[in-house]
Image (cartoon, rainbow, N blue to C red):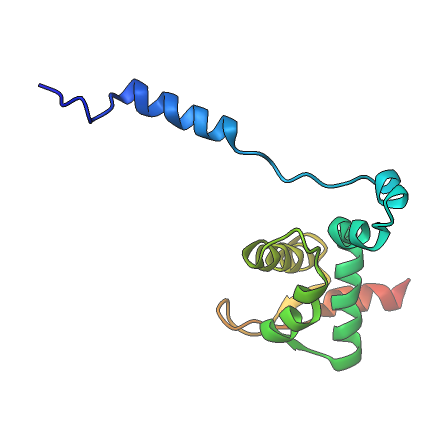
Length: 132
């Protein structure tokens, strides 16, 4: 026999739905409201930049210094990512950017290990750029 203090599966599912329904998403102001309320800087910080901006920063770093460790890339990008992202989301964003540069764009290569990457500019990409 069931105790009245133990909810049934339907009750558990129903309460989970209710809880997720009650939770509010994060709300952010639009550019027009930011301007009207003198919160333009906050709006820009929350909005962040396009991925291409962060990718260009990584490529500029590699052109200038030749190589970069994971820690150096983190130091370059983590503190300039939007304030609305928590630390885990920021690290995930950096990981996704590096993946895109490496696998999709093929502009960088990892000469280190998966655990300790050492990023350099792609040699094949450099050769293509010299030909153009």
